Length: 167
Image (cartoon, rainbow, N blue to C red; front, side, top):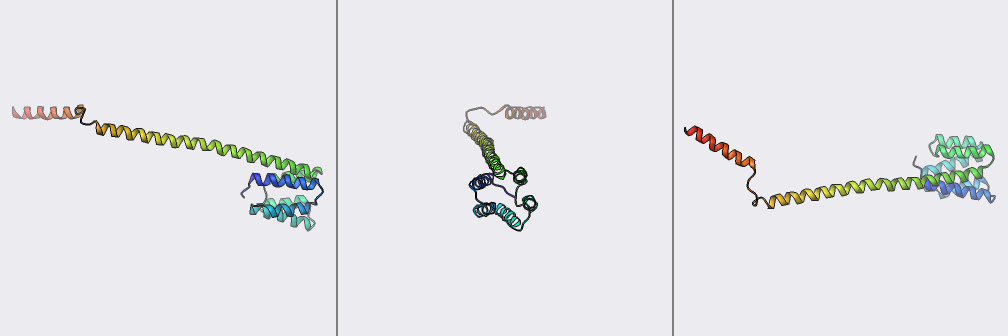
């Protein structure tokens, strides 16, 4: 199940606000489900709304949504705590704050993960540039330097071998 923390955070804050002004819970759930972009969360809210309208307690309705992998378990814990304490509005507000905090943290982590990728790309590019420049320098300056010691020693060894054969 893919959870969009920002969507879940704003959804909880909106439901808390609706409950604060006196909107019934079933209307809050319907409105929230209608505004969801995430299909699994919409299905979970619809499942909770349907279960509550059939007379099931909130804890059972939330458990069914979590078992069907349509609602996050942490969100279910917030709802159950709100029902248990009798402060569902406060619990929804806390859940909204928590999920918006998680969204901010995930954005910061994504930003931090971009830096090593940029640094690695710059390192590869600069290494390639330096190796290209060195190879061009060696290729263009090949006529300015005498042949290396390996070539000279091979020629000297061949001359020595020819001299020994001629003796």
